Amino acid sequence: MRVLLVEDEPEMASALRAALTRHDMIVDHAPNLFEAEAIAALGGYDALVLDRQLPDGDGLTLIPKLRARGNLVPVLVLTVRGDVADRVAGLDRGADDYLAKPFALEEFLARLRALMRRPANVQSDKVRAGRLSFDFVNREASVGDVVLDLTRREILVLEALLRRMGRMVPRALLMEAVFSLDDEVQPNALDTQVSRLRRKLTEADGGVTINGVRGVGYLLRETQ
Image 1: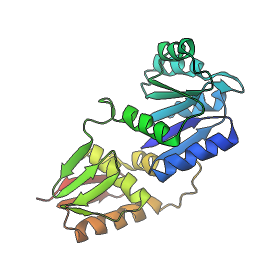
Image 2: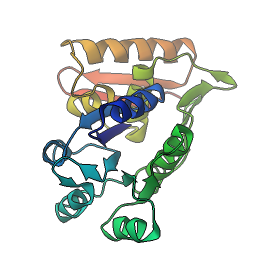
Image 3: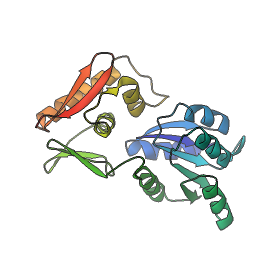
Image 4: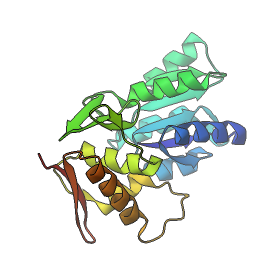
């Protein structure tokens, strides 16, 4: 899952980014509206976390611009303005949820997970392929009763492939799902992650296989 975090306070941005990363999400960060609009235009985000008080204006002004371009990414607005009128204003401008500062990280993560589980993003909390089961909420893959020992990036690769099971997933989409804009990525980094994941799925007898077309992408299929 990929999240765009728009927050100008360095400590808050760092804390939120660390929390999201611990929960196997790829995070891109923008400290102001100008950069946020440019990055959001790239697309491919599963959620947008948007602070209201930004150096160059009210974060809410970004939402109508995105919607006008057909970008329906779920938006969680963060703000120190927590009264009813401000919450209503945020929701009326197109926000999907509203969280007043200060807040508990556990609540923040729960609200974000809820947004990303909505039908436009995830059709089910779990998916099965072969003998493999993947839990989108807990970010766990298992075969039978055994939870697979996967790294964060292996989980991200598997999740992206399962969301398009049986279809070729272009390399560009996989790169977006696995690496943030700030990551220094080696040319074979994606292939290395896929190779490790493929080996683990085979060793676990998951009943799925990952096939690749050089320079094009990868697809996951059931083998039984």
